[in-house]
Length: 163
Figure 1 (cartoon, rainbow, N blue to C red):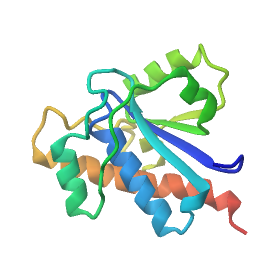
Figure 2 (figure 1 turned 90 degrees about the horizontal axis):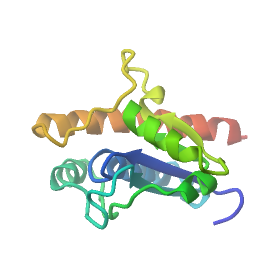
Figure 3 (figure 1 turned 90 degrees about the vertical axis):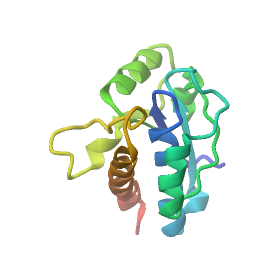
Figure 4 (figure 1 turned 135 degrees about the vertical axis):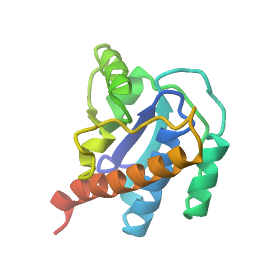
């Protein structure tokens, strides 16, 4: 990693559904754009419920069917993340509050936002719904939201940097 590397951290509650999906989708979009060498991408959870676990099998299955492999292991967001990442992208308002609470103890470097701020189809709802307790349709919906939002987020990062 160099000083010009763009560091992006996606955050949800347990780091097994939404944030690892966003990490995988964003990584694929960055690869597709040919700028993989300019990014460091990771994900974390605000809670420690699933530390060390692979993403939820339902999340992995939906992603796999859409050509995305999810292999990261869950971890909890740390104060140091807010000091080293350029962007910390929360999945919902509770995650945002938790990250901001943690940021109060950090030498803040990160710009903290919600992913759906980049979703033109958000209809005023800036939360990516948590599909954990729902059925298969919820995982499909979340993938659609994450893909749409990540695409616009990447565009927002690359636009000012392109010649």
